[in-house]
Length: 86
Image (cartoon, rainbow, N blue to C red; front, side):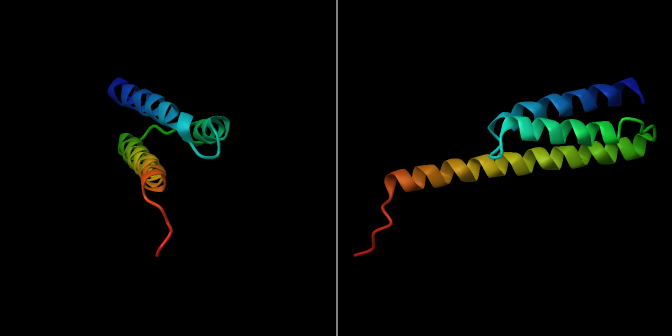
């Protein structure tokens, strides 16, 4: 694996690990799944395939951010708007 791709993979792993702290099923669950996913692809040497996997990881980051934003939105909505209809 090229050094530049190695750095990108490590950065992706750290970002996902950081985002996983707030995962609804728990940080330990997320960490174990993340580690398994990265270990499954650890022997990949094709740069095109590695870039494809990095792009998939970045998509997962966007999905996690959307999940957290939605959770915060629902909490704020529940806090400030009542569900009682007159």
